[in-house]
Image 1 (cartoon, rainbow, N blue to C red):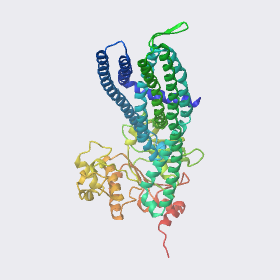
Image 2 (cartoon, rainbow, N blue to C red):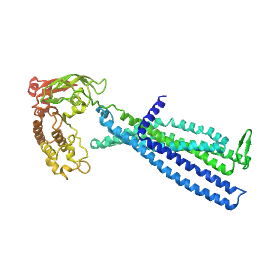
Image 3 (cartoon, rainbow, N blue to C red):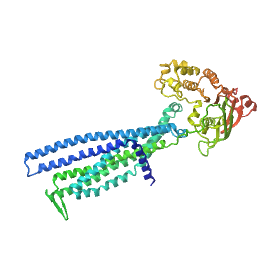
Image 4 (tube, one colour):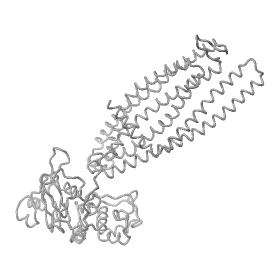
Amino acid sequence: MKKKNFKKDLTRRLLSYVRPYKRYVVGAFLFSIFYVGFLLIGPVLYGYAIDAMLGKDQMQAEHFRTVFGMVGAFAVSVLLASVSQKLLGNCVNTLCYKLVKDLRKEAFYSITSARLRYVDSHAQGDIVTRVVNDVDSISDGLLQGVSQLFTGVMTILITLVVMFVINPIIAAVVVVLTPLSFFVASFITKRTFRSFREQVRVQGELAAHTKEMCSGQKTVILFNEESASCEKFQNINARLYDIGWRAQYYSALTNPSTRFVNAIIYAVVGVLGAVFCILSDGGALALGAVTLSGFSVGMLSVFLSYANQYTKPFNEISNVVTQLQSAFASASRVFEVIDEESETLEGEHHLAKVRGDFRIEHAYFSYEPGQKLIENLNVDVKAGSKIAIVGPTGCGKTTLINLLMRFYDLNSGRILIDGVDIREIPLNEYRKMFGMVLQDSFLANETVAWNIAYGKEDATPKEIEEAAKAAYCDFFIRNLEKGYDTVLGGNTSISQGEKQLLCIARVMLANPPLLILDEATSNIDTMTEMRIQKAFHKIMQGRTSFIVAHRLSTILDADLILVMNHGSVIEQGTHAQLMEKQGFYCALYNSQFAKTE
């Protein structure tokens, strides 16, 4: 029952994306009627032609005129059917690609507005597969399904009407035998959806592993893990092969099975039609109280053709089952992305001017339930202070930054800025207060100037150059092929240190009231780092700044040092005060400057 409801929900949601483009649905419906109508005129025409050729009471010249007239009419019907089919294809293609465009746009917007927890908990390759490959799979399934659904339904309805008009008894036999095709097809297709759903899941897993290996190729080679990486790839690929083979096997059974049933129906129609032809001998046939019109050889030809046309849509639909099952499986994965809860941007409190007082009160946070990280954290930061956050790996330094930026929200407790709970401030306004430089540098495949001005679209070229000079990256930028107009990526390669300098220039251009530096100079040489520290010292004047540092020599002048361990602030004070305590910080500092004998 759950599976039925699940598929109904998927179908209902997909149809909701079709509603804005109803005119294409109407067009496809009308052109499918024209296409099928003109296509089904043909059998009637050459049926009459056969009867005309076999007629005994007509002149030979009249036979030829009738036959040639039927041939001409048949040619016109084929031409009109071709035009209708082309227009039908245009409507269906436009409908499907517009629907896919909307799906992909919503999925991408959902990712950009989703909570960071979702992106952190899913492999990037899997997310990319959902937005690109899975949406394409929906498109492929719908392109075939919609067009063949319209033409198939019209073919079934029209052929049924014509067959009942010609001979209701044989038509009734065809209708009675038809459910066999449905039974065979439904029996097989019930076993395919689960396999296709598992197939697209493993495809996402394979894409994630491939991307992971490509991005970390140097590390893989360094540790001689190529064979292990290939072995894992082969294992995933082998699972994908088994699942894909099983899915394709079941789906491939549908077509030949239904064709076999339809061949039986065709044979029954042929035998019954031949019997009626012999019994009627061109005249009316009385069967008890029922009198049937004459059943000629031409009419038998028409009936056989219509019986074949009647069963053909079932074969076509069974062919599409594979694509439709894959489309439904992919749709479920795409809708998982679209339905992902987005960040709450609303807030009632607007800060006209940011001073920079921070207070963390009784904060509790963990990434996963049951895995304790930050417990009862209390911190008081005065405006304009330079706050350093230090501690061993895994102590919660980066987590504290994530909480300050509202990448994650507290499980309990609160964080206040200038006395206001940060959850009461509109999220886009709150994050604009911060300038942030991370250890991992993000640069888009755009020009150098574009990357520096990222976040400040109205920046002038002069402002961009001044920010680059302040970050000591103007020199290497001018040595690039096109200077500030050089597009990063492709053939242009810059070092990690140069990337970090560009990110620092970006923050200096934004000139925000609050700063967060998470190992902002980790990839920069010592000489340049000293210059950058001077530049940072200038922009930190009067601004509240949070600095995550592993090299304690860079934060000796901090107004307040928070020493974290196991998610709690165990010590706080200036460098001199903490050294005087001879506690955890003192041991940590001395470990970095220990003398070797």
